[in-house]
Image (cartoon, rainbow, N blue to C red; front, side, top):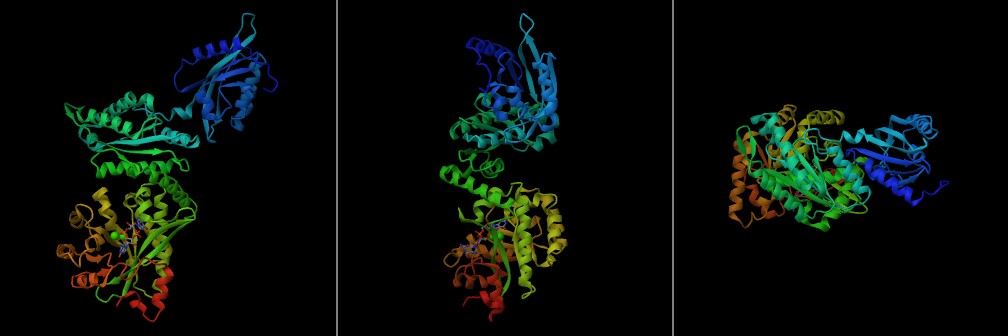
Length: 566
Ligand code: C2E
Ligand code: CA
Ligand code: CA
């Protein structure tokens, strides 16, 4: 208690009563009240929590709070408080920056007055602190907290290790509503969803309006089943229709959810996991709620911590990432003509993590584009070393659909081509059928620009998604890569053979080459050699290997035939 007289019980009760009366003020203000005789105060718990003060009740709170004030604002604050306690001034009204628990400064205004007792002696000093940084976390349209508030809440749950369940909800075809009925209608839809969430989730968690037409919920109490039923209620309500102009139109939603009880992670990783589940709901589950990692709780814990490490590696100069190269051979001569770069990540704790485990989750992550650039840069630098021996060697690099969406994507490819001095005609970018999630006009533009500069484009995993033929028809691919799923049983299954034959037919109509992946046996090779296929790739020739293996193969007496099998 450091030299303060202990406040008597009945004075503390009185302070509490007054404090409660003071607290009947709006949500976004903090309240404080000080019994000046004992310099004993009570402060709003939200404030003491957010700024990491010792507790709601404090002796000598002024000096404690002063520690949290920005050094440049501290002097003014100190004099203001001195004047109040010395009786020179009857109140104060000031603005300063105060440091939160997480080290960030918030702009606060503080207004207080001195209440005197019957004899005219200062008895209480009380007032309100308004946090302006927090207020800007409010979405004006819906009155919900916005995404800054969302990320702040996630961080604070992680910091204080409080388990939570998060849910991200979006409205289907919202852009269409805006286009057809105007922005006012769009706004009222958003307000309607916001209102519903506030009414139905309100006291069981936080509700947020994220960017565009997305909403989020953070709760500490809801199970997956609770969240599913909240969401189904919302879905049923809006399916009945919302009034747009003169008509009622049904509103379709989609949602992803995610439970976090492992805290070695950060807010962005949580958001990436959540977005992944959300996209699953949107694109593959017709709006049914999807839980991250298919409800596999054990896996889930493993993967958030793992994903967090992987994200950290990106920030840590790509430590742990490396590329392997899988040879591609000419289907007729079986000579090496190129290789596909395949990403790997390894560290001491998790060993080698296959790319399928982290790329789909991270591809929408804000960090992914830098990793994408690193992959392109590394692959081209390595391929140049191979080209010293085999000048026509082509390097294939996989792209994520989210990379293509970025407005600076083509520029960044050209920069890397220029900086590495790579021949663009020897670069082939592979895109998967997930690119149908993108705007076709945009994709066509990107592809046309890249191809005009000589870069080749391949359609990866052909046949695995729907509308493969549709994509071929609409977009100019140099190569289609037939997924290994179509050739696995080609030796015994006649239908599979005919299917692949038809693929090669379709490709030739659209002027593309065909590469078949996943050749594992000489029998497969023999059958496929009869078809008009341009190149082969698969374990029969080689698994993905390190750069050095390709170089030493080429340097051996076998030369370009180094990956040919008997
Ligand atoms: P993908 O592009 O279809 O790559 C081919 C995958 O099939 C590779 O798995 C390869 O090791 C495997 N494979 C090749 N030949 C055979 C075979 O004969 N039999 C069998 N059973 N498998 C074979 P990997 O390296 O695990 O990569 C998986 C996926 O991860 C890739 O599928 C690709 O979609 C993604 N990926 C890998 N590297 C990158 C990258 O740098 N960027 C992006 N965006 N995605 C990548
Ligand atoms: Ca590929
Ligand atoms: Ca593939």
